[in-house]
Image (cartoon, rainbow, N blue to C red; front, top):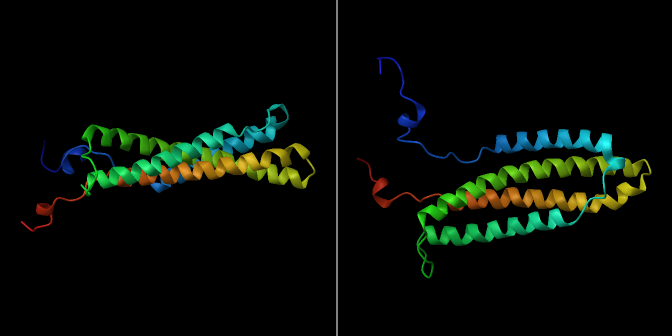
Length: 170
């Protein structure tokens, strides 16, 4: 490497690694999904079936599972009494699940927020089908937000605590 050039980022930080999920990325994904959902619903609502309840229920169940998994994983990583040892490969898989869930939850939340907003506007205009679909849209929004929270909690739980000898100055 010639003088004056910096090494690649992965070498400067001590090696490759995952960064925590950026909240700005989640917000941008949610806004993009909201824009697309608004356009789709505004143009095709009459030809779409009514909103089902199964997706929000399933998404919320996944969020609850991830929140529980976050709690148990954190206890296992911190070696709390009564907690079994944690497999490092499992933690890596949990991190991938957490990051994917947070992003998916942001997309789902944005889409359902847009759908719910569109339905509220249409209810004011007297569209009776909009009144029937609004509760499912609000449930989808809540489930999507819960998935974001569950994913972020699981990601945070998978962080390795600093080793005691790392705190001492060299």
